Image 1 (cartoon, rainbow, N blue to C red):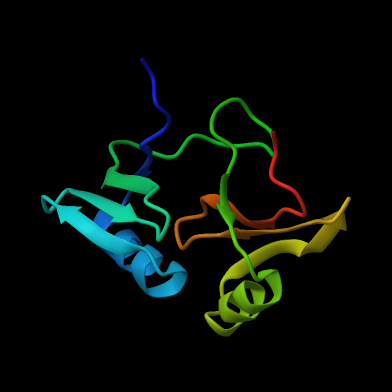
Image 2 (cartoon, rainbow, N blue to C red):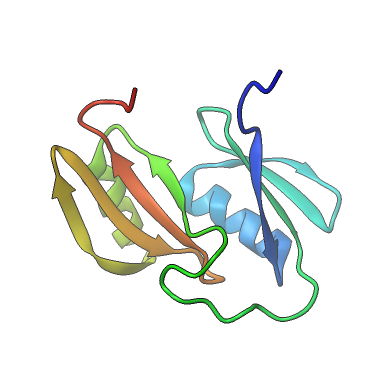
Length: 124
């Protein structure tokens, strides 16, 4: 039976460069490389597969169909936010707090949307 999500994939114009950004900026580890495909693993074991893109990026609206963002769970929102500021990532808005949950959206170097997330209580 299905156990969960092992990884999500991002098509990239420069997979190695993007994999190195995830490793250097977000603390992921590059745990596999074929030269065209890279897997990066987060400290909790979740992975992103970064593959060579084919073709042009489709125009995207704020909530167009398809994958919208990847949420990165943190235990110290302020420290993670400061680290990303120091790394000069491109933020999309300011941090927001709602019902004890804290969120801020940002982009990787290829424009993929991510966000930091600190939950007051895990979802059931």
